[in-house]
Image (cartoon, rainbow, N blue to C red):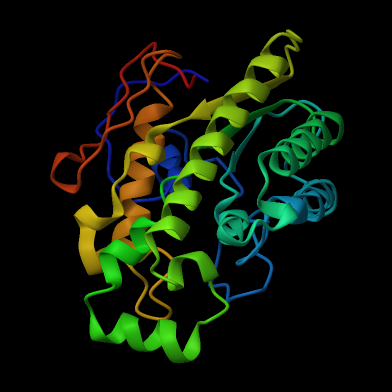
Length: 271
């Protein structure tokens, strides 16, 4: 996908930025979704999902593309899928839950990527790395509202964060690093297949986001766990910028004050 040089209007989602260059792009998220509900249209994400839940989301995506987007040529049009998964698996790391183990994550992520390759033709997959979810505790523990939420309301949101124990938080960080290494490993495996109609690229920038640098502004006002609008916009900046940086030169380290959106010029392409 090549870009003409135009003035970029930052609208804070990947789809809306892409529409600045091509207003005919389809499939952006529409309307609101609520916890444990499915996304709208081609947004197949489900809040609180783990890596083992993604195959159902891929099935939903493929079915919706085939049956509801008649203006899309399912076989020949290129699709962009952004996959960000694993944070909820991390939440059981301090208890040694099976679904938090690296080998579990690897087998299920491989299943997901294989399913996408085999059921959705001509697709570019952004696999977004995991940041240190432990930072949620460091960002929120000194705020009375978050303390209240974690203690009385959201005890099952993310157990290993809510304990506040250093050993639990450190275990989450270790697992996050292992998950990211697995994502890179699997991307290399698919790249070795030299499939002209399927590409997996790891966009690593979120692993450099330090949540406590954002402070309470990172955290949702609802549950003090999910990212706020501010944080989601920061994620968009970083993923978008990664998409125009060549493999091996994609940037990791980002601080809120340094966030600047890349404006593609003629001849640049997603990679």
